[in-house]
Length: 352
Image 1 (tube, rainbow, N blue to C red):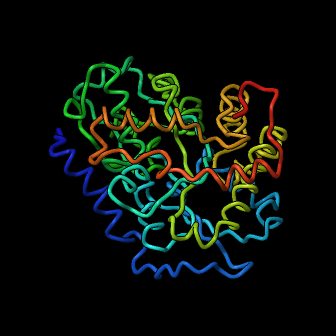
Image 2 (image 1 turned 30 degrees about the vertical axis):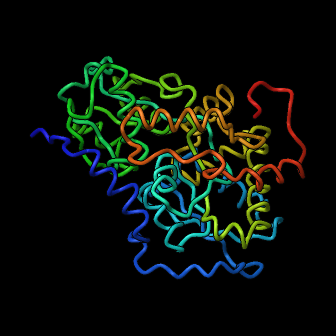
């Protein structure tokens, strides 16, 4: 049965703005945010946007496993949530000190008056692709089909819109089927959906195990100037804990650099973290780091790319309020200080 997508703008506003500003429903009663620095050695709570950590978010697993965070004097507790919308709710509500999410819910929160500011990036380039069974050869073939999304306004739904737009389609031309991030492959295989936005490791696995599944759009090619992943905090927390933010971004920058230089160990850590086997992660590594260089080794906060992404959000109709100014959305100070302490890395076209 076809599921119409109605009042999409209203639904997005409720999810990405009102829901964010309302507090931290995804966490129950959130602790009040005092603005005081947390004691040294106490865990910094970091929210991640999928139920199981993806390769794109696995930099924090590397930073933990290799001791980079411990060497920075930080003990980090990660919490895996349903989507970036939930992570933003957690940061705004005070249940998380640091959030990791795609940029869209962070921009929407800031545009709606939320107390959020971006301090760094995990993968600033897109790491996902649109995958479909053999009967869907191009994005145009999605008309009338069932496509998987997590929730309206979350990252994969935004990417789905971009795929549809590339074929002159809109969400009204398909049926949205809610699917958890870790269930996309199964939903594709059993026919519940005929399209999903998959992380690289998911796409590698489903194509290996189910011939006929194939990529109909690599999102990095569809929107090459699109900024993907962010680390963000509340501005009030940052004012009281700027040194913590600098140490956090120093550890994550070290992790990014380590990942490029140590494939074998990175593959082992990421395989354990993502729950995919090492063969899949090795292939994903070659695409993400070897070919595309998706993890920044310097600041990873390109002003032109972020502004272009906000313009694209406006064109898609997923930005209900006026886009925030770059300087109010981004405080690059912590990651700039981190890179200054480590030294700028140059000599490769991928480094940024």
